Image (cartoon, rainbow, N blue to C red; front, side, top):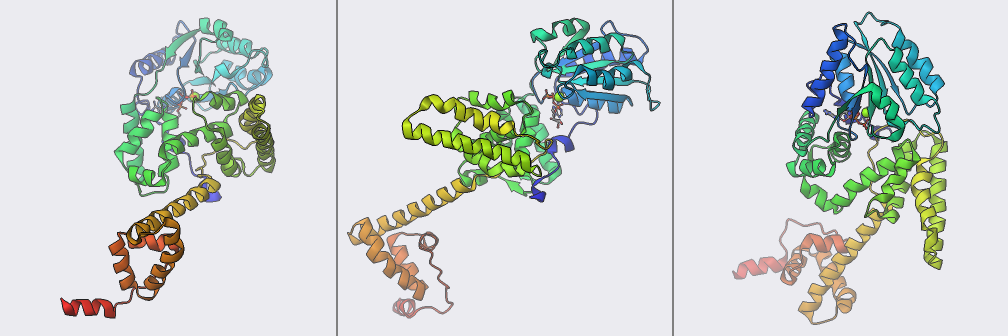
Length: 432
Ligand SMILES: Nc1ncnc2c1ncn2[C@@H]1O[C@H](COP(=O)(O)OP(=O)(O)OP(=O)(O)O)[C@@H](O)[C@H]1O
Ligand SMILES: [Mg+2]
């Protein structure tokens, strides 16, 4: 299990300079100009900014890159992790008032994801942030996906708002191609384009998708994916599974239910397969997640038996919120998900069945019999001939228009071809 856990590419390829942060040039310029005012010793009109925009477009990355490039100290909290205003006060307020520790010329106070603070649960959290901004001697940067939430109204008035937009498909393609080059993966441009388009401007999601299918491989082609036969579904399922298993809030896990084409039976299989990888080493988390899945399974069986569709919401809640709400979940790590073993086995045996029928049909046509008779009475003879005299066997198969390898695969025949030509072909070549 250990080697499946890799360094997340989103961390490995996090931009380290301001220039590396792609897209949104105007927003970047505005942010840097505001920061430079601080560094020049002036206090800008607004002491704080809110960088806001969709997930995975580089808001947090820009702050990190700027800090590094300008040699500043960073005081960072993820606002939705620091649950109480007490903790916020302890960790940030002092730092905001005091000078730098390391002799860096200044520092940035970063309050990441402030829209994750719920005004009901974290009473006082937002007021504390207001207090931090008012008393800070350093630039305060807030990030949010949705700065228009009513609870943020007072904060908004204290901040300059800088908007970030989705990253364009072309730029995402460039980043992904670059990563492939650096990882030594030869990836079909069509695959990269598909991932980029599927990401909806979320570069983090795009990079995660790429890692899911390209990590540890030399080459990725559309053909590869199509042989697997579940390209489109698999890409989506990767994302859905990742959302359910790694979301910090149960509401975001439940959000997958709003997808128009979510196949929840499929999702159960995928979760069933991948829970241990994502939740190890926490046995408690694994147990909780499977407990939720098994309850969902019981309910679904009852739904089918009694047509009790009114129970469906309970099953869906268990599959999403129930699994995501497991106790003692380990912190996020990048895990390469597996296609469910059960489905793979099923689809394999279906393919094998279909191949047998295809062959029997060809025989039936040539021998004027039914497919059933072909299977029962003719195939065993061909098989016997093929095993004892591969050359003759392949001649017969050739006449019937059946590819040799397909016959061998379908009926588990292993013919060791001898170098020596059979008497049959020798006789033929003499005649020729
Ligand atoms: N503009 C970008 N330039 C380069 N890499 C990016 C950019 N945006 C995102 N990434 C990649 O995606 C990862 C996540 O980006 P980041 O944390 O900056 O997103 P965010 O905008 O803060 O999203 P969220 O709203 O979910 O916090 C980064 O580590 C980086 O690998
Ligand atoms: Mg962020």
